[in-house]
Amino acid sequence: METRVIKSSEITETVKRLFMDCNYFIGDDIMNALKNARDKEDNDTAKSVLSQIIENDEIASNEQIPMCQDTGMAVLFVEYGDKVCIDGDFESAVEEGVRRAYDEGYLRKSVVFDPVFDRINTKDNTPAIIHTKIVSGDKIKITAGGKGFGSENMSAVKMVTPSYGAEGVKDFILETVKNAGPNPCPPIVVGVGIGGTFERSAQLAKKATFRSIDTENPDPRYAEMEKELLEKINKMGFGPAGLGGKTTALGVNIEVSPTHIAGMPVAVNICCHAARHKTAVI
Image (cartoon, rainbow, N blue to C red; front, top):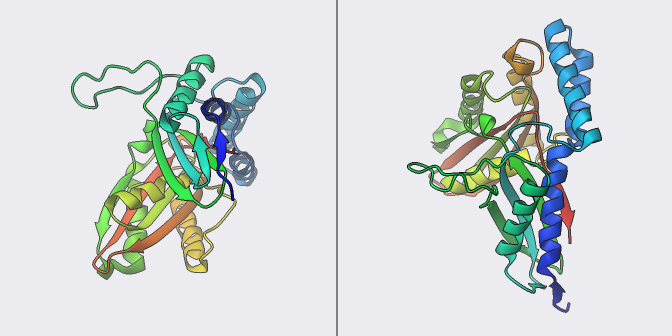
């Protein structure tokens, strides 16, 4: 296979479109889940909240305006083909795409340069968080999402040891969601990363929130765990907007990775119902 040259301008335009689209257009998986939850809800307040969320998302789509005032920190998962050559710097092209999206798309710029002391806004929502994986092929697949921090702040990582077993893993996930309560704007999507190292589990948890909630883990054991956790989370009763009801979570997605014999890292990344992510292949 010959090397394929991709213009950096194409990367920039693709990233720009992805971030504008993910903030304007909610995914079909989320919208369908919201409508199903509303139809099954017998709590009038919860049903009203879900109806308002649905209406909000429809207005955002029709008028192409942000579905939420927090348009998130830019996060990208990139599968970079090993037969691809960019006629420039890939990271710079991505950053320019983010910059243009948040400027031209009238998206709130929420990133501060120094995390502790100055906390001065970068004024263009850069830098982005870019996770890159080299794969075979001559294409680049980009999945982009804006991660809001009301839910991000409720996330957690724990270095669980193997002696905890599957029940210990589930207990930590449920404890994290319970401690979050109404703060992450339920109904939520719960991303779980298990395995790898400290940082790998967190990366997997974030990636899990980008996975469509109408899919399941290919391993039937983890698929069953996803279903069990979703059922138990919804029995917590926080409900839409934390006002009570049947639907605290729309989905639980689990991603796993091989790990060290002495460890079993578990990360829980919580995402609000504005689960923004779009994908493009160049």
